Length: 206
Image (cartoon, rainbow, N blue to C red; front, side, top):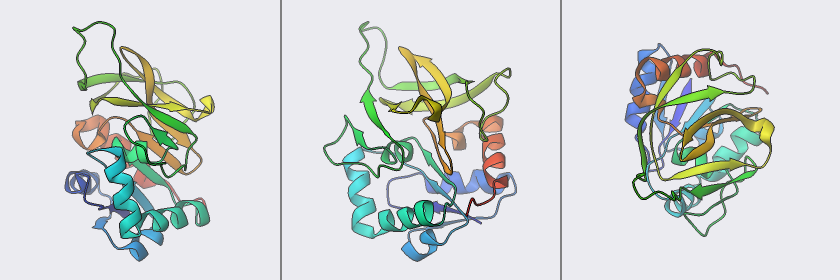
């Protein structure tokens, strides 16, 4: 069973619907006990970094996530803001992140004023390291993006997908049971469905 974490800042219903569409068993929950003892977790997110961290702390969901991914080694997939919250710091906020994955979130700063921020629309993801979420690097993989901030991973081996907008940036990371996508797989049609299907087929590492 995949539990989609509802902390008041994500399009959890869209994620739930996409997982159901690929045949996965899924529920949306804001209950810390349900989250702490889930088989797999998805942390979606739309909004600001500080507000997301505050919501996780104040609801007890942050502690539940830590227990699940650190003590039980449950697979966790963070999407967009959910991916950012898994890192240590963000230029968008002043609060520290969950620090599950070493790295920082940066703001796009285009030198050419004709380049728009946020980065919005379909773009290519290039797979550059062995991973479980993406198909072979030889295949064109297109996903839907909406974001003004991007991830910098401290450890280059965590980076498994790269996209170019203004410059190359991390669009997918994997670190043991921890995964993040900058794009929205729930809005990415067959490519997103394939990604959720692969995530659903993963086993727990505990």
